[in-house]
View 1 (cartoon, rainbow, N blue to C red):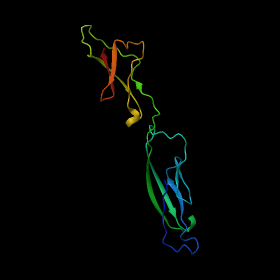
View 2 (view 1 turned 180 degrees about the vertical axis):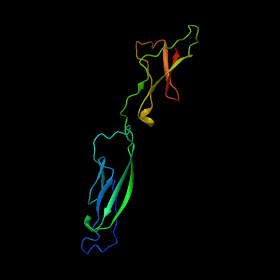
View 3 (view 1 turned 90 degrees about the vertical axis):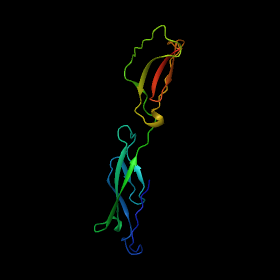
View 4 (view 1 turned 60 degrees about the vertical axis):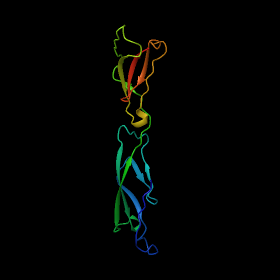
Length: 153
């Protein structure tokens, strides 16, 4: 994004109205262009799962930033949006479920759950039974709690 500061001094008189920007807080994650006020990311591969919210303090100083110039600051809150960069993970590698042989077709056998570190749409999990792994006997559906409900076919 870009920040803009204005100075009421006469721009035709020396440097008194020439504003320069600097970053007081927010490094090394962000930088600001001293002439334009454009804020950019300064580090590659920033990760929302590590840190989501950043408060960046920008200073605008007149007189071209020289000693004796006056300054103003603003805080810019920057929130990283999520990418679908994490796979769902199960809490254990094997789930043990039991079903009585007298259970009717369509009855729930049990629940399994995988957790995804992403948020929103990127954290939605869909469960499937792989071919050859009991797919002819069981089905699986996802409930509103993002759990996989194993159902007797």
